[in-house]
Amino acid sequence: AWTGAEWVRRPDHTWRTPGSHKAADDEPVSLVTWEDAKAFCDWLSQAEGRTYALPTEAQWEFACRAGTTDPTHAEAGRT
Image (cartoon, rainbow, N blue to C red; front, side, top):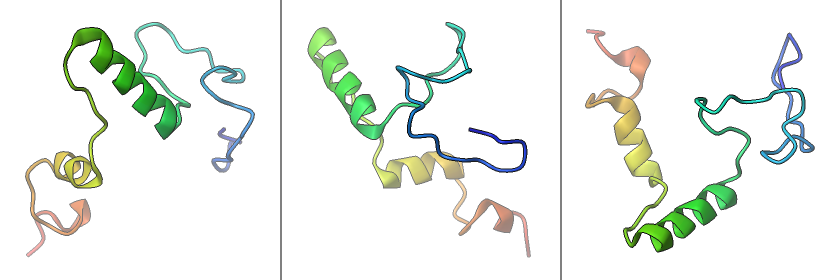
């Protein structure tokens, strides 16, 4: 939760009990654990007969870099 000065973890806030934040139907999911996301992928895979999975760390990093090979985004474009 944002206190106005910093982010503070609120263990009582989950996707089932999000606190004061009420997401709209067109907003992305939030407050979901890795286990919940994995369970959803497993359920969707079973329901659709296709394989759905969370990205690996390497896949996530590749996607975040958007094709760059620089160590960090801040390094992009520096000479």
